[in-house]
Length: 294
Image 1 (cartoon, rainbow, N blue to C red):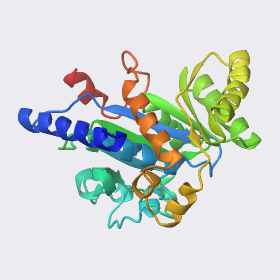
Image 2: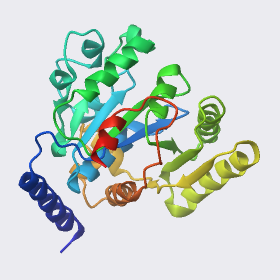
Image 3: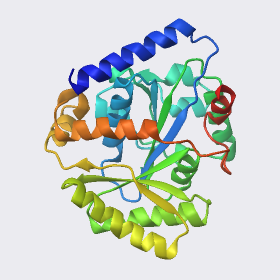
Image 4: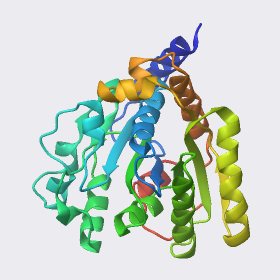
């Protein structure tokens, strides 16, 4: 049985098990991961989408939150039509359930606003309102992927520290590596984050990925009190820009491509991650549900 068939069979068995036990009032422990970067244009959103597709293929209920709140990308990347967005939730016009839309591969998407400046810096009240909406969400989620904006804005920092795991995306470009370090530095020194997962993108194999890891870890070990693990890597692959132009996930359009196989391995590593013990300092999305279910 090839890998794709194995994933489909695993997904079928997992969903049958859920149906047998019933989903009413049941929430499994939710894994919340933020995918972020220091520099824009490093493929962060594309990684989020394909990771979501790979996780869904393994039988996980996946929600993507487009947290680049003023510059919507997820729905555009996938060619998904949306009527409402997170701005309507923050204003109280719509509930979270009314805004979330279905994406390909059974994933769910919480779309961001586009070109709306007022949502680019959330107030404390808006953040708490959003948290309350997640608490009232009435269908099960196994994994939530938060696609943050790039850089060190207050929104990026808030959504990063709201996650159990922070994935830092970097490419071989020197500016990308420098900016990735800057993000970890701010998250470490200002917000007390001490553990990061590095995901090199658009690299020439494992050697290229390890070079980025060594460049970053050498500096981080010298100046920051953090741990940084290499989560995997996404190889340079001409299939990716072709899928982006077609507004499809590369995993969906070219399942046998080298990058697609890398996303499958990445999903397996994500599911093997152990959640951090106890709550971190910031109020975290879905953690009360996660704790109740454990």
